[in-house]
Length: 263
Image (tube, rainbow, N blue to C red; front, side):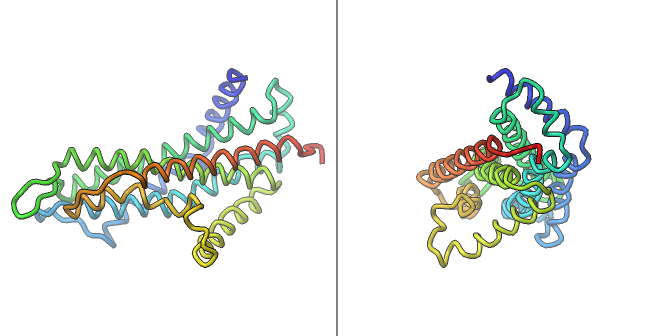
């Protein structure tokens, strides 16, 4: 089974590599980073620009990156349902749940690429136009630039978990609809509705979307000269995101297994 999933995943990667839409995703993230200095200026003034790094990363990942990932994941299965190509795909020795697993792996890969591209663009821009001199207070060095980079990279690894959960959510909606346009609309619309209602309904702590900012907490506080701890927030990000990812994957696999592709 794992061999068939891996083969199906490689096919999905090949299709994505030939798609202009897939290449547009990281380009939009890079564009968001490049436009950030308009709002959060950079200057070589001797002051470390970790605040810019945190702000640009949030814009690139938690706004632009999240929206494009939701749109991409929502079209993964629904586009094949709409065109009918899913029937050809499933003529191969690939089970329906393996087909869904390959789509999920593609979305997880996309989430990691978006995160990596955002990180690279943010740090290159900050190093080129600003200062990365470490964090000091009263003349005493608190964190070196290398220590801040390590905190950022760990935050980026944590950020992939809620991003992957968002991608799995999009795949689930995609498996429940036939039109890519409707899938994208429902995915983004329901996300926004839940984001507005989660605090009045007091369900925010249980939703992975409430933890998308948490991976950057340590980096931001270190930039302010504080000494924050990773736990327990980092563990919560992982546990909540993984739980929702598994739930979305199971629903997508079940919905796909029950669908009549001849209709």
